[in-house]
Each structure stands twice: as structure tokens, then as C-alpha cells.
Length: 282
Length: 324
Image (tube, rainbow over all chains, first blue to last red; front, side, top):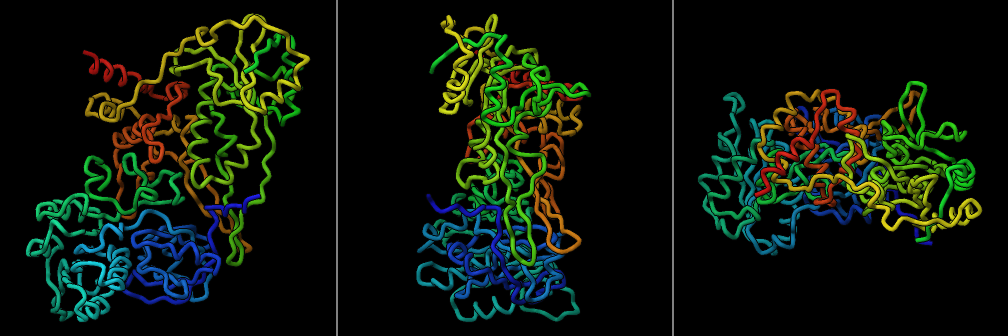
């Protein structure tokens, strides 16, 4: 008799280790899964997602903000935006949670090696791209130039700002920050004011060799894809991390359908070229 | 494939034999006049000459609402469900094709445990049917996708064993059969009308009929509920007052506006979007079943539609465009 296959619906037990407030509605959660989950979670590729269970509320798909640490703990950057995330934000360290995954395809790390990588994040889109960035920096010698462009609505909503600045100061990546507007009162001068596409317009880079990774609110994709293509980045090298309500994670519930594709198994990372003729994609 | 003749007068005895393989369910009519698959306690309840049930047999494999798991004190547990053995009797080929499609979805990679457990305990006995005006299946006499099949002929039925379980049924019912003159080609009895051929570009063109359908559609979702192959589901969680709780899944419907929602946006905000989406999925398939049509031509969507939307109207127009 072969070993009984674990029910894909069944979450592993997990525990909330700690949380750090990042903004008024967004926090970074560190979550420790039970030991039995570690072999599965160690297969995590940047861009994949996990289903986090909050008892009493249900599940929510989250792209971790970093790969699991040596102890298997995961960092999840979560905005309080719905039923499940609201309850997650109310949890105290030690609270029981559940975790399933990883699901989806993730970024094609092998294919991207030796190439320059341009990361473009808008708002909370920095979360999945942070796991990609951390992976790139940990294997710095395998990749070309690394550039992060990150736009937020205003300075106080910029996530991981100090961390990104410290990483850029080490000289291993280039960092460009921009905010939609900067209230005069807060005195922060060190980032541009304007939209992400404005940053890209003045950027000189080896476009034909570059892989771009984009994550942000839906309107961001449309203009960035056009700008990247115009700059000379091939549609097959523009990787977009998309968001849908993924209920099952294994391609059954159909809530995450994008045309004839499913975000949870064909994505959540798609190439711009794949989505070209799908009106409901972006 | 061995064929034997079952005289109509032997049907009651045959049903008793089928009970050896599980609880007998078949087409019957409720007090409210709805044709439905339900337990058959006495042969008189059976409506073997039915046209179509309102709810397809998918309910035996994907219950409308089902517990996925329970949780208590930080641990999640699967339900300890042992599904009963059931013999589904007198399924039409379209419904059998519907189950075969669901098998592709739920028994493929990452097999769904609940579905697989129920499927393994299900014995399928098909029966040929006579298409009516709503039907557009391609093979009303197909013996595929079942354990055993009855083809209606004058005075009785031709029995065919299809699977090993079908052979077991044949062996158990051997005394009831007599040798038969089997017609050379059973398929020729009722030629199917055929599900329209699939071509995403053609179907999802800017044909004005789409807008016409969208203008009349009321997004009631009845066509999805009644479809033998619609399987999309939602997952909900219900905490109990004394701690712990359950997570369930239940049928969902892509005609509901909530289906395409994410935080702050909806990827299918209009009825036109949702109509196109449903029929793109139905006729052109999804990953990983892209290119496989899941319409089995049972005609339920047309039969239940309160505003009379008939997709064949679009197909015939599109088909006309195709011809030289």
C-alpha cells in the first residue's frame, strides 16, 4: 500500500510568532509552521503564494515577503482589507493559524540568471517582489544588475523603506523611490514625487537583456507594460504577479480564472506576452 | 463487450439485483412534479422514460454543500466521512459524459479526496434516450463512461457490461437475460444532433448576439446550477460558539457579480463579461483541460433559462459565417 496522500485542503498547523506594524493598515507577520510542513515550504520559489488560515475567518492567499528562514518561519506582509485579514490583524503572538502551500509557479529563477533584473512595485506589490529581491541579493553573483523601483501613495505608506535604503547602501542594487504626493509637513525629501512610469521614463538600462518583474494595483500594469515594451524589454521577459481570489489553490474552484488560464496554477506570475489577448487579465 | 437482452417484464428483478451493489438511485418525480435523481424504494417510483432531471447527477459527487475540514485548538482535521455505495440507474449518455468530465477535473493531479471517495463508491448504469427539442448531444446511445448500459429496444433492453463492475452486474443478473438479436448498429437508432464545434475566436467575437443575450440575461445562475459539468465552488468557514469550527465548500456561480471580485476591483463587472466568460469556459475549456468542451448537450441550460437564452442561436450564426 502506498502512503496515503495528504489532503490538499488540509492546512498544516502554524503559530503567529510576531508582528510589526508597517503602516496604519499593513503589518509584517512572522509565522512558524509546524515541523511537518517544512519539507513542503522549503520548495518555495519567489512569486509563489501560500494559503494562510485564520481560525474562524477562513483562508487568504498571500505571497510571502521572503523565503522561509532557516527555522522555517515565513514573513507575510498583509494589509487589513477583508474578513480574513481583519481577523489576522487582531491575532496576538502565539495565536494558532494554518498554512497550505506553496502554490503557483513563481518567477523563473533559472531563466533569469545572468540577466539584469528590474523590479517595479506599486504599493503593497512590494511584498511578493521583496521575496524575489531577497533571493536575488542572496545569490548576487548569479544575476546582472538589480534595480528596484518602488512607488507608494505617500511617504508614510512606503513599506520597508529603511530596509531597502540599507540594502541599496551596500551597493548591490539600485533603488528608486517615488510617491504620488508628499505632504509638505512630513519633511521627507529623499524620494521623487510622481508615478512609477515617470521613474521608468528617465531610466537608461540594457532593455533587451533585462527581465522586469512587476507587481502592483491593476492600473499600474497597463501603462508599465507599454513603457517597458517601448524601452525594448521583450513581452516574454515582463513578468507580472497578478492577484485574484484564490480559494483552493489547486485549480479547481475557478475563482481565479483569467480567460482560459487559472491564476493559482498557471500564475500568479504571468509573462506580459501570455496575457495580451485576454481582456479580463489586467 | 457482451450483450444480452433484458425483457421489460424483468426490470423489477433487475433492479433488485442492482441493490446488491449499493443503494439504488434513479430518476423519479417529486410531489412537486420535479424530475430528480433520488433513492428508489419501489420500482413504481422509477421514471425510466424521463427526459432530464432538474439537477444533474453531479450532486452525488459534489454535494451542494460539503464539509472540507474541521478545526479545534489550532489543529485542522479532515472529515471522517465514509460515503455510501450507490448505484445510479438510468443515466443518459449526456450525464455520463458530464461525470466523465468531472472525473478529469477532480481525479487528475492533486486528486480531490472527497470526490474520489464518493466516485469510488458509485456504480453507473446508463440508458439510451430519445433527444427532445432542448437536446444537442452528439451520441444519445453512447455506452461510454459507465459500468453498464441499457439500450432501449422493442420489448426490453440490450444490456452491455462496460467495466469489470459491469461484468459483476451481468454475472449477478445472468438468470434474467436471454439471448438477443442485437441490432447491428445501435448508434443508428437515434443520431445525435451534436454539440457545436469549438473555436474560441469565433465564439467570443464581437457578434451582436452576445449583447442581445446580455440584455435579457438576469444573472440568475440557473444554467450553472443545472449544468452537469459546472463545478466551481466557494469556500466558507463557520466558527462554532464553543470554539473550533468547520470549513465548507459549496457550489458557486460565475454569473454572480461577486465571482470576479478582488479587493477594490472586479475583473468581470458586466453581465456581458460574465456570459462570455461562462461560455468560453464551457466550450473551450480551462487549464489544464484547455480545448476540451465541457458542454455535454443535455439541454438543461435552455430548459431552465427564465428568459429563453439559447446559445445555439449564436452557434448557428457563427457557423454560417464559417461556411463558404
